[in-house]
Image 1 (tube, rainbow, N blue to C red):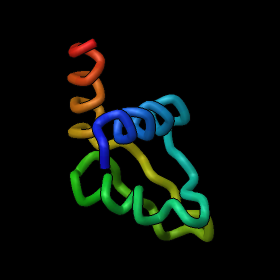
Image 2: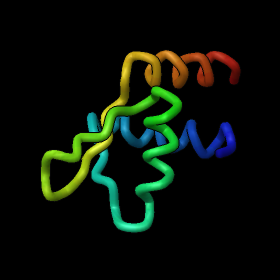
Image 3: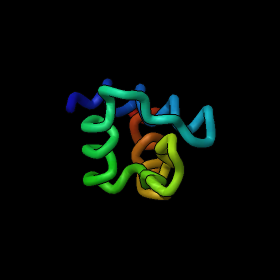
Length: 66
């Protein structure tokens, strides 16, 4: 996954506090989870992704590089 795509998704999750995972995007969010940037709540009918402290730190680092 490209840095800009990661940044865009992390910004969306950060703005929404958590993000619903829509059909067809599961692999993308699972990749972010493997990287340690989000946690996925799979205990509801609709799965949600939430930023981890590491994901927030990475997003801040990307913003500081601009």
